[in-house]
Length: 104
Length: 104
DNA sequence: GTCTCCCATAAGTATGCACTTATATATTCG
DNA sequence: CGAATATATAAGTGCATACTTATGGGAGAC
Image (tube, rainbow over all chains, first blue to last red; front, side):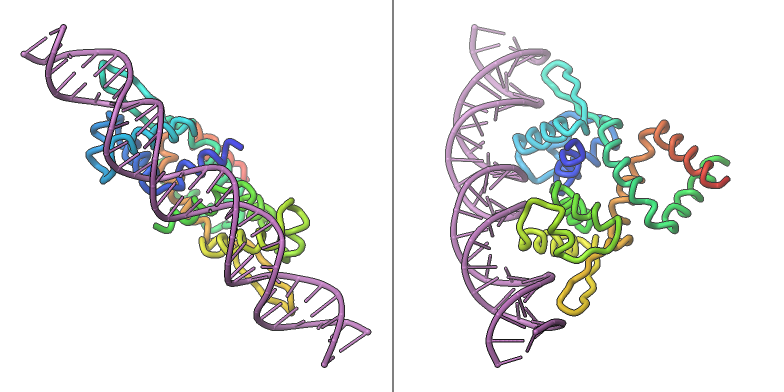
């Protein structure tokens, strides 16, 4: 199951934090490493898992590897969540209002 | 982190399937058990994890235990996803159109 | 060339986890 | 009461996983 890979990849707190950090901007591995209290191999391993789940993309430049979020990677998760949004009309309302504000 | 419990709870395929089954309607443990090729204790353990993550609620009636989805439990996940929806305008468009149809 | 630098991979370890069987705890039924 | 039913918990097991240190390998810097 493809959803399983996405859920599993995001289930680990530090790995999810790596993803969230990359959501801000593209970063190299060493830049990422600076923000976390784990070793460089640990970061590389997390990136490999995120990449395997389709959540991030890699770009090599010289001896550096830059990683960025792949927007398409979250689509399975978004789709799954959307199937269950039907259970909370109040939250759909909230979202509707948000989108109305965006239209103006 | 509360999100971590939700992600972890939904990361396991059979546990996520249990949740999805409960999304249809409230069910007793033995009813749930019938749908899965695992033992009754396994089901009870999955339900305990889902309950710990705030995703399901329990109701005792006699010697039976009925479980149902707790809509509030998915809010952390929905909020997390919504933070990253900003990355895909095309998906937001899709959702916008869906909501417009619901308005009519 | 050699020396750093940046990153990935290998290998090992310890903990977590999803399952099993066995047993405990209630509750209903006869 | 005792027997059957419904569920939870205990205990054990095998495998996944999140980390570590050590090493490999390629691309600038000198």
